[in-house]
Length: 492
Image 1 (cartoon, rainbow, N blue to C red):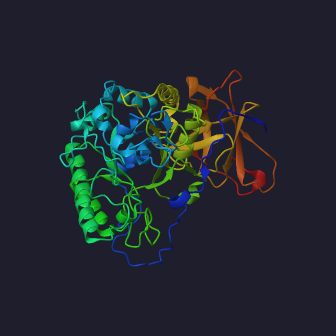
Image 2 (image 1 turned 180 degrees about the vertical axis):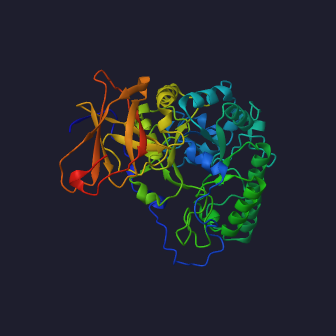
Image 3 (image 1 turned 90 degrees about the vertical axis):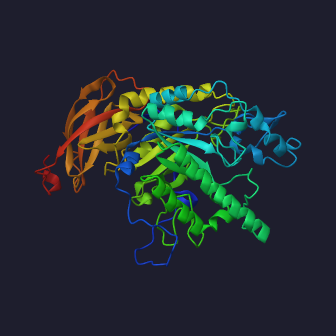
């Protein structure tokens, strides 16, 4: 059957990447570990169940790096804009790192309005936010008492993290705080394993500084639901299995219910995300950065989310978006349903400029995505894997007795043919197009194929449906009883 493809082919059908490709070892594998995973199975508490229901989230990367925006003195940084402080070599401006380290003296985001950001996120349909409190440059967006390199010593001075937490909480959006272990500003930071006594002492000071800042964040912003860690791949941090394990326990005890992903620490053998026995370390898998799993089987039942940029690989503000393809709201809708249909969440990133403005292109994309979620949110929020093979038309999600078919590829003949395995314990009873709340006809189809393991149901779309974006059909399911095991005489 020919179909009209409404979306653009997306480069997201990866099977995993460095961490996501790892698989859980057999229960018979018993490598003795002190600092591996401490959990058997997934969390079942109320906060984690809430996390699973989010569907859509927002990520915001913002800091001093928004001032240069990927460029300086007519030169362009060839990398992700939030990494611009690491710019070196012949392509970099003279004395660049010294220049960057003084940019905080210019940080005065006069257009910043956390309430405006939060309202836009709510209108987009986001249920949680991940916000960068401190990126690799070490600049703290809150008035930390442990460093002078913070918002306190900028022209702006006001606590940005507090404004963000309060504004998003007021809109009913849960806040997770991003924190980079890498800190290029702290004198004790080392990327490599310390080799001298002096380096070791310096790094011990850095470790205590890191602990102090994390406890400070949880103390200052008790509404925080979780911590999202970055920069944990350095050899020096990977070697801190005991310290990081103790710190994680301390953070969880200090803030009960805290959610921490799989990238915070390594076990004593240097294994990150998954310990040496293949068990995930943390509450959910964080290996899906700018990629999505090809099938639910590779996830092996783990909780997970995908963090996704709108341009290819710019998290912080970059003033130049001309270099490559920019994802549309339709692309993100496809990715969103891809994630939810496999029990995951999609988190869409935004990079405000140095004045605190979310760029117009991102705002337009957020508004369009919000128009879609407002009508079709039932297919996302609290919806999960349906237990059915992926349909050619798009994606199935399910909540209670409702099956949602999000149609990305509209059939030219206007008929959605559902192939439901005979082993499935439910069958369609009625269907509604969420756009306009239009009831649709369902008929059972005898395909006449001997030994076929499916039963087929045709849903007829309205003849005047001029779909220019994905749409959702809500299907009520009832118990499938009275089915014959004789394929030739199946009854529904």
